[in-house]
Image (cartoon, rainbow, N blue to C red; front, side, top):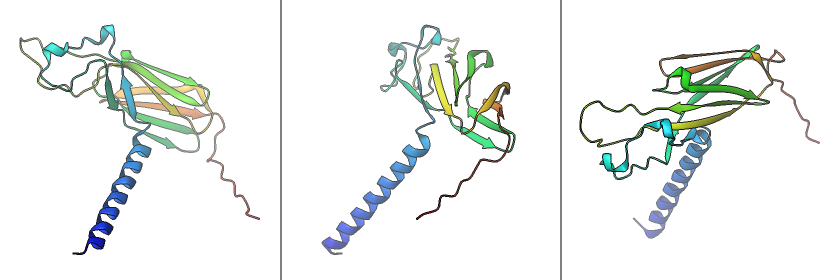
Length: 168
């Protein structure tokens, strides 16, 4: 194998890694959510955890979500495992949906130490841009099996408008 061949292979590998990283950041940037430890979070102290990467004040988590649109509504689904529905707040501010809340840590009742803590706990805020105006008063939400489903009625029913621009 020649040096030029190795150089081309490394360059190709680097380009593929860079493209993969760009794709990951584009698709996950909206799903990454910061959890802030608060007084009510009930998190263990660093002395109670053997995980060297445990930082109770810095927690990030993926709150995966989907958005579906038809002629009359937008449906937003967010994964919020381990939450209680009374700890969630849903608001619509102009053209964004804001979901916030607090996920509480549940302590074990027996004596012992935590070996690993990878779940995020504390307060969070997730902002979802809405592609069309919605009627906030006609919207509904339900929470089942860790999935928050928000159905938003469109202010102007109909398919998304497509406009063709002529190139001159």
